[in-house]
Length: 102
View 1 (cartoon, rainbow, N blue to C red):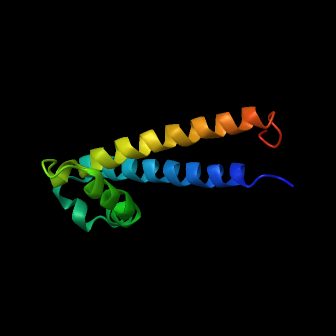
View 2 (tube, rainbow, N blue to C red):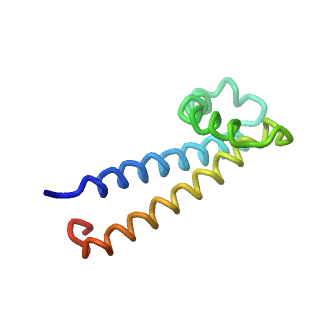
């Protein structure tokens, strides 16, 4: 019977990747839309998509980190998580002899 580890790692990696892209999109719209970004529908969509990551960033940040920097914290934390999951996938695929990893 096949191990469920690889599909779980794939799902976690996909969630981290989507979070990174959503944070990047919100950051780009922050720069492009200017002060009218709060009325931009896509910026509001990115805010909804990024709410879990921003909450995580608030939770792991020390109190001295200003709230406007939580986006940077979330992006860095998700980047580290994405790399860790990728390394775990590589380790798993090597340990099972690349069976099912193609």
